[in-house]
Structures are given as C-alpha cells and as structure tokens.
Image (tube, rainbow, N blue to C red; front, top):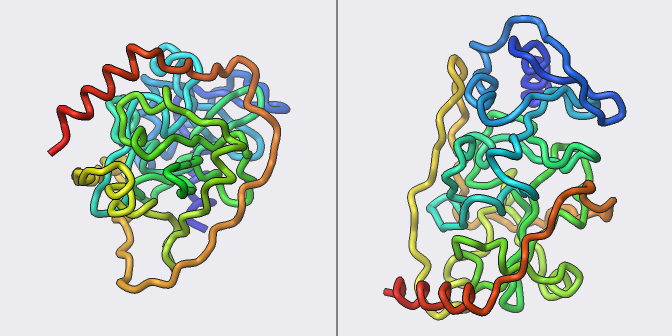
Length: 274
C-alpha cells in the first residue's frame, strides 16, 4: 500500500520528466504538486533524469556523465562494508544516500538501470548468495517483477571488500552453482548478507565495522528507521532468481584486472591488515 502511495505521489512531480511508450522515453511536463511531500525529485534531478515508465511509474535514471558507461547499482562507484545493520555499499556518488538505501532497481529494456523510489531504509536492497569462498548479490527488483539472472554479480570473498570490486567478477554460471541463498530473518524484508565471521574466516583477517548510513529523509516526509531484527529469528528462503533477457545493448562488462592491478590491490590489502 505504501509503495502504491509513493508511486501515486511521484506521478505528480513538478519538474520535467519523460513518459515511456513501449519502454521508449519521450519528454513530458507533469503537473506541479507533491515535491514537498516527497523530495527525492529535487535532490536527484542534478544527477539524473526522471522518467515515467509504464510498468513502474515514475523512476529515476543516473546520467552517464555522472556514473560512466556500464553503470550497475551496488557495483559501480563504491565498495562493500559491514555495519551493525548488515552489508552496505559505501559510495561517493552524489545520489548514493538515497538510491542505495531506499527503493529498488530494475534493468529496463532499452533504458538500462532505473531506480524506483521507496521510503523504507535498508543497508542494501539486494539478494545475497554465498558459499565456496564466493559471494554474490543482485539488486532487488520491485514487487511482482522477476529477478533476471543477468543481474547477479559474483566475486571471491577475498575481493568482496575491494574498492574496485567490479574488476573481480566471476563467471555467473560457475559461481551460481557454488553458492546458496543467504535468506533474510523471518519478518524482515531484507537480508543483512553473509555473516562477517564467515567472511573473516575465509579471508584470514577480521572484517572491520563501519557506521550504517542512515541517509537523509526527503523534505517533508519522514523515513521509516531500519527494522530491528529479533534475536533467534527463523531463517526463511527467498524466492529463487528467474531467468530473463540479457542486459540492454550498450552495457559494457568491466575489463578484467591486469597483473599490475592485482599486485597493487594485494599489496594495499596487506598494508591494511590489522
């Protein structure tokens, strides 16, 4: 119900946006209203464009000049760190406070990754897989939308917290078979991710703890705080990922790291070991 109200509010934003016909965006000028009630629009407008996409309502897409070619949420422009609330994607991107902690992402045909606003906080809205020294994650799509298998990213545990984690992506088919879902506790809508104790045992050093980024609520609208996880919660299985079409044309796979890159990152990791 809350998500429906959010999308209704987004539908009457006051700044220019686009409407899509068959996933092709064309400019429109929405009526003035709800910016005070829901302030993501003015906060994110300098860094991307608002689109009206048929199945999802009002969505936001970052400008390529801000994120570069081949942007992928929870992969581009940041790194993973452990907090008391779970794994979060720390990023210097100017929109990270909103789009990596609220709402959902979907890879829309011919549009690429677009963000669907929400007002519930999480350290990261992703599915997790873990096992065999491999960690995988995929952005949660909006309710009722299947998760494309192409959305999964896998890396080895010792590369998971690297600043340039996109350099270490593994073959999806190989890594998916080695891992299993990391389910959220019963009653929670998000999973904290693989336990840091397991990651520490795999990489041979403690996992540092970072503060959780609470973000800033949009002007005039309170944001729900992160939900408390009851102790001893029963673990349930999330829905399995569904297969789907490949990413839109033009999305480039990050290049594999060179030997010099790997040596430099390994030396940096050794310097930061406690």
